[in-house]
Image (cartoon, rainbow, N blue to C red):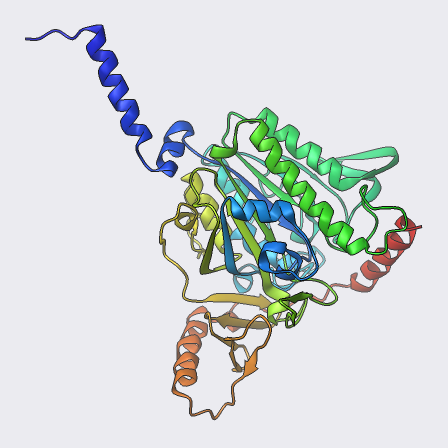
Length: 448
């Protein structure tokens, strides 16, 4: 029987280490620290026309462009047309007709039928079961209750459904914080979030970072020049700057290769969408057109996501819950229908299981969409080959074989989903007019 010497053991150890290093990057990262950290940055009222790497004619976003260059840019991601239902869909992984998250303030306790934390399993609870520390930093109100009710360990938020910028108060872990002078709240949530990351750097952690930018009121930022004539562009620039600061801090802490960073918009651009390549995006926030729901989605996992790639697979907001659970090795909620489909394989450069269609709903309006066709609740079929610029209504009596086949496929999907059989009675927000007036008052005050 032969004897093992110390030199033999060192050789074997060296060979084992070399074999591990020879494996694929995502496997090496997973082996090194088990589960990746996840950061999800969500911008507000920010469509694809507001991001440079999507071809924006007006806005420069060097940090978002750099994130895309270091990872993958998804060409087709759809949210709901308003922030409330989008956030409910992400948090629960379920479509609005299942949860009641139909429109803004659907959760309203005064008769609202929106999702409640007692009835749904939110993403924070899903990830906590897999050992994740969880944090929400930013806008929350449209979801209802508090981030703590929905499972977040640490959280900071505010009372508004709009933008919250130069202010003297906010809520931190359930306690009201009141200040003597105004602070720029976006800087406050950044510091809160980075403190959370530093304390949980050993991981795994999940940071949900729902920025108020670029929701109205459109006011000056700390970087705005005196008398700036384009405060909206200033707000886009500050959003981009904050993304760059988050990425830089993750790099500084040595966490970049074990942290998946995702950026998306919660709905399309408000008021009027911009242009890409000189062409006007069709529709805007609150509409069921492309400009209302087509949003940016960028993801980067250094050393794992193939850099500089563009993915043409379709994504809708129910997919984020399933994707984060997949990345974390967490079990999805049992006993309920989860509509999301994980795109975690695509983040690793794999084919995955791409969607054949996405679903969008706002109140009593909905549609299901393939890449080139869309069918809504009224039975209207649209040719989407020139989307997001043109959506062509197909005549009901068309003889086009391709259109007839598309209608049949999409109607079968709607029949299976049966949105009309779910929670479709939308509660009309009573505070909509008051909210618009409050935004105007903030704009007037901040821009003096």
